[in-house]
Image (cartoon, rainbow, N blue to C red; front, top):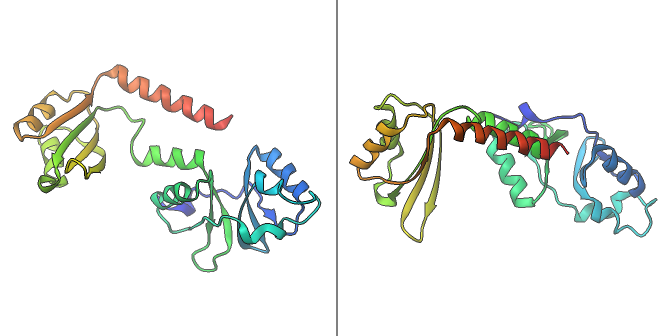
Length: 221
């Protein structure tokens, strides 16, 4: 999934020649404390409510502090993971998207839309069980792990890895399309994989969906 597919231009960016007072009004309208700043399609960066209040006078143009603004962005062809990486690196809740050809401002991706896209990409709210296994780094072969799962008539919907350098292991979280994981767990154990945890009850799936819906409602507040 690419950034251009989920970017929105509903929120109008602040104009660099606009005043601090106008910026505060816009933030209140969109219920945000961060907004992108542009001038004629040129992207300057993201300004925060805290930075606006640092102006000596709220009727001063915000361009006076644009040189110190954070400047996170992704191109429209960037992958969703690049969007998440930029948000984490700059500690922001919106990521501006720029044109591949002209670098002009196209829109923003909010934390809410990013999370929704990630859930769709990774089948987070789809019904199915989850298995967490651990293997030594030297023995890690993802294709072999997936083969073990699929040989037991279970399909892998998503897979995440975390390298534990301290203990020399790779921890793998596997989301499947089945709540019946007994055969897969037994197969993993026969192959010497350490089962860290597993979730395969219907109640867990429903609870996960409830938590996801609650998180969406929280973000929309």
